[in-house]
Image 1 (spheres, helix red, strand yellow):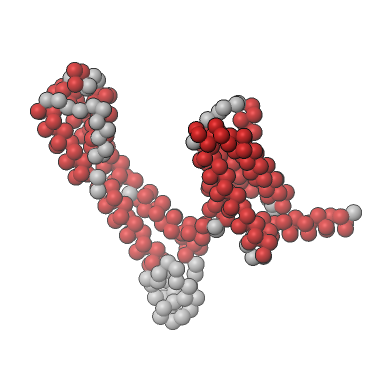
Image 2 (image 1 turned 60 degrees about the vertical axis):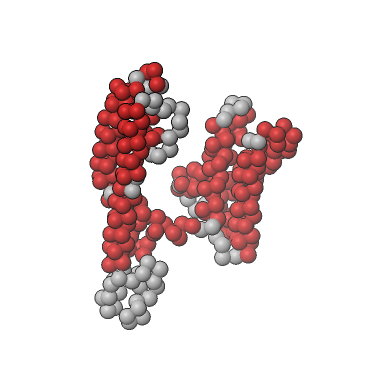
Length: 282
C-alpha cells in the first residue's frame, strides 16, 4: 500500500516537473508542443470564419476543433491531478483561462450555433503567456498599472471636461442642422460629435449648412488639440514611477540608489541587489 502511494506521488512529481516546469528536456518539449497547439487552434478558429473555407472544409475544421478541445481537456485534467493545491490552481487566472478555453466546444453541444463560444475559444491565446513565461515581465506591467492608477483622477477630470464639450457641441449641431440633415435627436448629435472629435468621421451624418460645417471644422480642431492630453498625463506618471522604482533599488552594502530595473549587482560596489519584484510587492 505504501509502495503504491509512493509511486503515485512520484508520478505526480514527474508530471508536475514536465507540465509546470521548463528545466527538463521533456518540460521544454511539452511547452513547445503546447504553444504550437494553441497557435494552430486559434488559426483554425480564424480560418473557420471564412465562408468559402467553411463551406469546403467545415467538417475538417470541426474535427480539428474537437481534437484540440480533447487535447486541452486532457492537459487541464493532468494539471489538476498533479497540482499541489488543486483548488488554488482551478481558481487562479491561468486555471480559469484553461477551463474557459475548453468549455465552448462542450457548450456548443447544448447550445448549437452559440456565437459567444467563438469569443471564449480565443481565450486560448492567453495561455501563450504561460508557455513563454511572460510573467517575468510583470514588474514592468505593474509599473504601468500603478502609473495608470496614479493618473486615474486626472484622466477622469479630462474625460469629464471632454464630455461637457461634446454635449455642448451636440446641442449646437442639433439646433443648427436639425432633423432634415440627419441630426434627428441630441443622442444622434452626440454620436456624430464623438466620431468627429476623435478624428474618425464615418461620414454617415454630415452637416449641410455653412454654419454647421464651420462648427464641424472647429470640432475636428478641438479633437486634434485634446487627443494628446491623456497621453501626456500617463507619460508623466510613468516617468515618475520609473524614478521611484529606481530609487527603491538601494544597495544594502553601500547605499547607492538609481540602479536600472534589470540590474542584478550594484554598479558602485558590486554587491548583489534585491530583486525588483520583491521590492515592488513590498
